[in-house]
Image 1 (cartoon, rainbow, N blue to C red):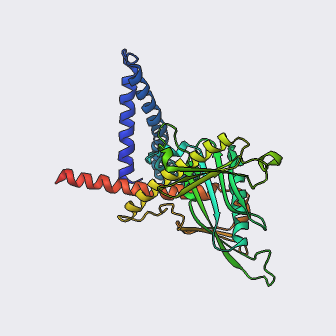
Image 2: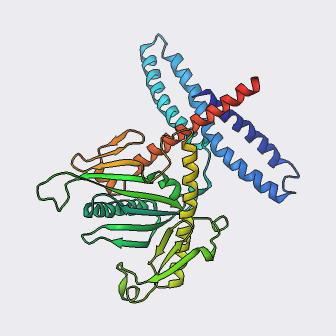
Length: 371
């Protein structure tokens, strides 16, 4: 374990002892607001310290096993080596868990998400691929127990979508899928290809956190143009016979959001405004990330849709995640919504990147203090 990480964990352990003393004081509940804050901090610190204590126990056991492996009794030495190998695997797993727990938390990670899929280069084949991606993410959401709601869709003539906006309702939906934003490329033989040639098509995916009502950007009605129209998707007789669908245009930025999911024009307007707020917040975040990227380019990237992040190669059954140089030969399973291995690898890569940045800052602060 890196000294920086161990030092941070030791600080957390000392802070947990302080919090135990503060919460156990006779006057601890006199100030209810302070008591709530301390209780929340105690729960967060305890969630980090308990795995760290298990790590220290395994570390001590590993040292003992190494000493026994030098025993002149060959049978005892062999058993000690087997135990040491098992303990090293446990330590590696605990260290990865601890690194994840130490990462700065984005408050948006716990929120619901808007998932936007748009067909890019490739014409009808790109639209079909957009449909495949929609199915992939819907299957994944079902595995997580999330609720999936279609806010707007523009179907393509031969199937799939030119554009699709989904709302994923479930705790942590945004945090789970936040690294999916970017360009997704597919290599396969289209159904319309008579000569069996492999074509390359692309779609863009954007994952946006659903805005917190208390922190959402305030929209000026004078800067909005609101249009109503008849829904074009499948939705029963009523939805296609009334002008219940709503399109909202933010005039200063040109951003557009629409919703045609429900029968109520009022409900669709509220949902469209929510999507527009999410897009405006994402625009601000993206511009901020671009400014930061001028100083350093992150491994995972800014999430810009122009970033080509992944290739789905059907002939080889291969998925290539370009940002972390990961290749998985389980494309069929992934297309059925099995994203766990891929998402975990992305989280670990991002975690290692953030920990490296924190370590650099700590080293700079230490050098500054010594100077």
